[in-house]
Length: 252
Image (cartoon, rainbow, N blue to C red):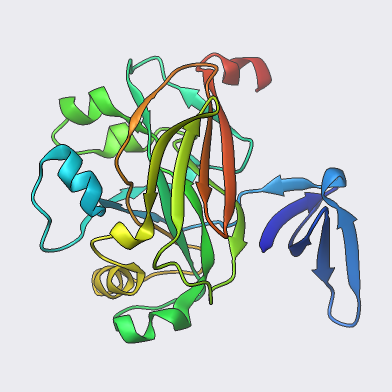
């Protein structure tokens, strides 16, 4: 697992080994305790590309047809927070949902990548929560406002190896310890290589860009004070707490 960390004024990537982080300095390496450094979001994307309705069991749950092509929308990098970051519940909404998802981190600038070559542009995999103001999504013609509030893109905690087989990984969401989503990536309608081919045919992908691959059934509401966990087999657990909007006024 690779993470992004801060120690003093220095920001660096490091390999997580148990309770320690090893940082390669070229001719030597440094080792830090996880407890002594700050964990940051694992990527700095120029954009976050999300996929709607991409699980067969979710489509069945909603009684919707399987799409012929991926349904895409964007989140801004300003929405990103990391593991243990606070999800701000905006005053302008009364219905905020969690959506646990598998995310792919892009390793290099690319476009028009064939599905067969997708592995060459993958940095690795992580957990993602596509937090959504559901009432605003229904109110607006498009999804931008509902999806793009600050803190509505929790990602992490670390980046798993790009060679990981993600074709059949358990994906679960818990709220306050109670299981809410329970599926497997085998239910994806469009798999990771197909998504990279489709998306890179539309837009240039940059290093650190995030593709979040859609959510399984069981999406539901969050409330202030809730702790939400997204767990993906062999990748890790992304944990965040929901706080009221005035939380930002207290700390800034």
